[in-house]
Length: 361
Figure 1 (cartoon, helix red, strand yellow):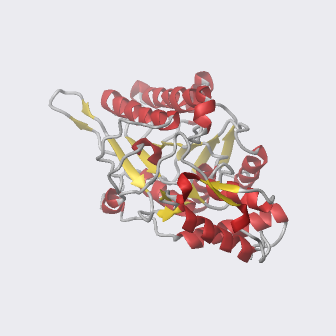
Figure 2 (cartoon, rainbow, N blue to C red):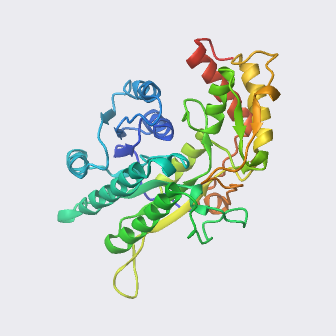
Figure 3 (cartoon, rainbow, N blue to C red):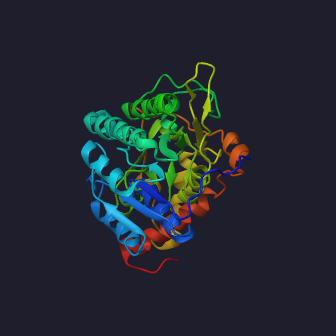
């Protein structure tokens, strides 16, 4: 295991996308568990999905005295620079991104703005945080995605695999972020770690994700479509496991070293965070349906078969995602472990409380 070399206690930490799914849970863990930390949450509060859900998450974070919120778009370079100048973060966790594979097919411009321009602005701000001999940003941690593996037929997916054939613009922007981070690590010795997340789910998650969207449709009596005729597998990862992985990674920045050319060897790393347990989508839907009934979201006599439709593969989709998390376990002693049924049970209980106004069962 690697020895931690970044202390989070009494530091200022930027979390972009703080009103988003993962950003909310990470910010909450930091505020509750790290002594003297100050979390500065950044989010543009866009309407890609229901803003009320983002406001719900943000309202919980505002209860903590050490939390500050900035409603800015990271694609606004002046606003990003102003935030860095005011708060001087020691650690930056970039979780702000335009997510969604299918949405990138119809709305490519927002992916370029957020995922490329926005990330570039953060890299530039990190670079200039060292001006004048200042300590600056000690570690930049950023979200990549399992989507970078595209139609990779070798499983499980390893960070050693070539990922030069994205099947969606979303995947292309995430791979581009990794390349940008590598270049800035090489040129300016910015310690950076990219994390390839695998199908993150859980309470208060993103409504565009399958488990959440299926629940909304089933509750409305609509038909859900299961793509590739059910012949898909996803490596579902519960949000608490994702956050635990991020927290461990934050404390260990890649080391700055000098190469034979006199330039920095890039203090750069990339890890998968996934459970390494791909689930067939038909099995996943069955488990979800059982937990929705158990929680009281759907009646016990709900006819699921009448509300399921097998459909062909959609553009941008891949048949399988499967994480090789051996490097994460080797370096940080951690591998996601929360099983799918337990995670879906927690989601269903939250959904019942949030949308139906009942107590979580």
